[in-house]
Image: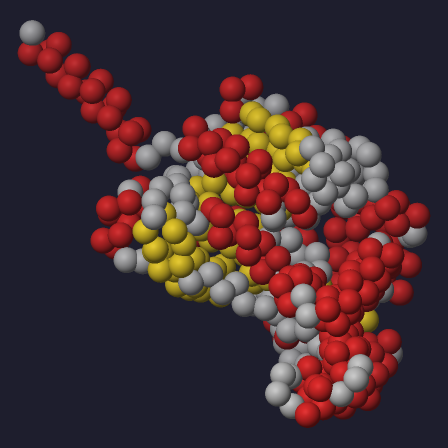
Length: 436
């Protein structure tokens, strides 16, 4: 019923938000007689603020059309490598072949960026992808808004998430693959690779885990505390709702994006209030650069998606309430998850000193679980002064975190040619010995 009321309220507000947008343009566009009236700048600023507070925010595009490598502009095309009901595997294909040959880009390692399915779209990792592209072939998981998935596609659980990750790894090929998981997916990625290791499958060369809830008993945050102070049935009855009829996923039970967004805003209400006030002031003063920066941030931050209810409830139970992974008590589709089975796959963990979503120690806990990973293949980085988003986006990500991630991947990436060379040398030595 709440979802239906939200849709009704959204439809009722739509004419006013559109009118506010029109007023902002009329009073704020240079050259119109209304813009020359006393107080026109404040009227325009007020109307734009009203429009942005009330408008719908669609999924923004990645809009990565080129990267610069050694002073050369290399075009980039976004392609769908694999299309599943709840997720698209995207590849950012770099062109042209000549440029890749000249710049050595064809022999670079491959990175699968596993984006979180926790409210925001995968475009939240735009800066992560853009920074990786000059030195890596990049894929990303692009999760589908559950309200857009027909009910006939069936349920989507945490076990299904793990299965998706395994399928993506096999599709790309694990030989020179490095898997980077950001926040929530650190748990299912570790499970996916653990199960592949137990089956004797080829594993990725490395795992880079950033700000994730591997063990939420370490430095619990407000997010963790909320999940543990309410029973599972409370979440099922109060935060999951049925998608209304005006969407393809009508009848599907989800954790709606608008409720998630309310939770995001409630975590730091003063900061968001001041940000909007500063935006209004920037518009009045004519500081368009800072105003545009505000628009870009909130165009991304306010764009949210619905999560399948089954997956959301599984995550609450497995990760935050029962701590099944660090306790060694997690079974996925009847198979036991044992991170100790992982061998020959390097592990790097990254945490932000000021992370208020995944506290210090929660991601680093992966090292205690992956006892089969050699000490020389491990690394950990705590980023001083960084919050949750700072470890994968923004200046700290680009200048402090990425260089270490890039070097870690390079150290543990071995091309087919390099691996084949010692084998050929050994074979030649044996042949020479026989001849002698």
